Image (cartoon, rainbow, N blue to C red):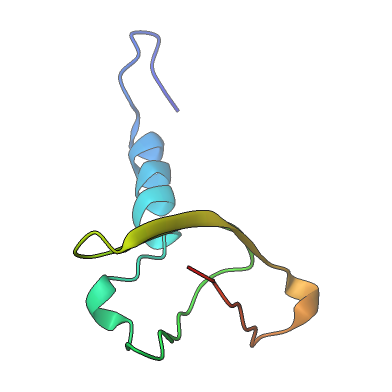
Length: 81
């Protein structure tokens, strides 16, 4: 995917785009409904790293969550801040 001089071939750019755009799920804070703190996200099966930051110095939390294919199409995850 890279030439001998280290420059990327078109496949490297396509793979980078898949990892950082197509296969990345981002949830802007404005999409989370408070005070319930619930949001529905479409994503891919697998392990995700998440981070939540509460505006105004309200704290932050992070962790990992798994979405296994064996659990089915609709899954619920509770992230406790």
